[in-house]
Image 1 (cartoon, one colour):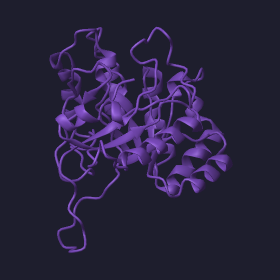
Image 2: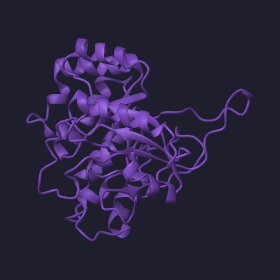
Image 3: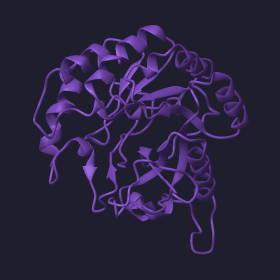
Image 4: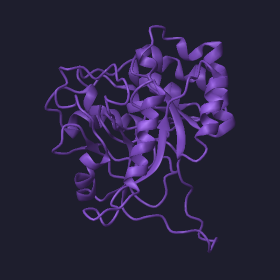
Length: 292
């Protein structure tokens, strides 16, 4: 699964009038990074044919490359609809905060985690969130594109779970990887006006087919809601092998031109790295809460 950039607000802007406010760390933020460990959690998408991915990956596997791109902070993003995956991210956050003789200085900090809870069981979700009070949870994600029913996210029980996120001040990452799901984003935004909705990966535009509609209009319709933000990340997964930034640019430009679209946190188009598992999105500093 690719890593790119997310639109989860995890820190306020600097307050120049507050002498107690610490300056933000230097460097860039990779705000959409996946880690996984098949020995600890089940990942249905992780099949043997994905040979390069079919093993555990943690922050340490890409730490040198992140440092080479001046990335000093990451946000870990849910990779499976189970609690074990979230617990693995907690463990990675703990590991990243440690130093050792072969790693005397931390190079990457975990700035936040977008985890998973059972949204269709709000009581259970609330208990989990209570037990994670000391964890850097900034949002919740569910792989809605893997649900058989495209209206799963509109169900009454799930709506109660989404309102729990509103109460806890957490964002919801929307995996709107089909036109059907993208069409449901404005409905979600209207039903839950207090919920910050983050559209993953610009809703997977039709880059490979060089398509345009109805994706473009649906994205604009979603952008009209004030609580919706678009995420530029993982666009390579919607493109053909051998893609270049030229292939991605029209879709990014559309999102930037739309007056209603709030692009996540000063994103620039994802830049490929030598590692096929990773893309790094360069992000200007200071502050994560900024929209175009």
